Length: 112
Image (cartoon, rainbow, N blue to C red; front, side, top):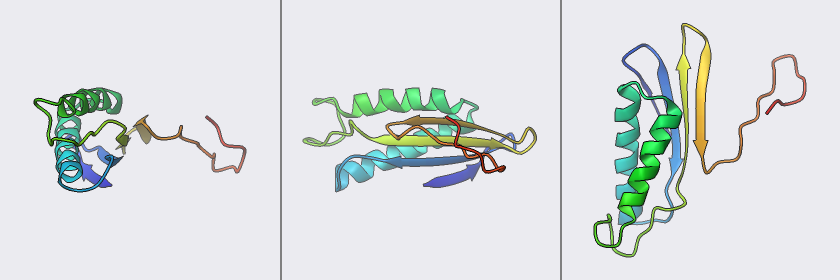
């Protein structure tokens, strides 16, 4: 999990998990984490960032050019939320996680 301020005053929260353990998983997590931070800082929306991360995971999984022989990052998950303090809105996108649930402050049933 990583949260950081964005240049326009918004705040990003990124939660992700790569498949497996060891050097391949650690290197993949580092690369995807930095890529997400750079793309969000450049102004891309969470869903656009996830599209780019998906392309990167696919490239890292190539047998000839991939990150680590015998390691696959396919099946990794990520959830990105960007909070705008001016509009009080959150942009949220998820890949590989269960759909989000929202419970209103009035205590009603969760909305989907």
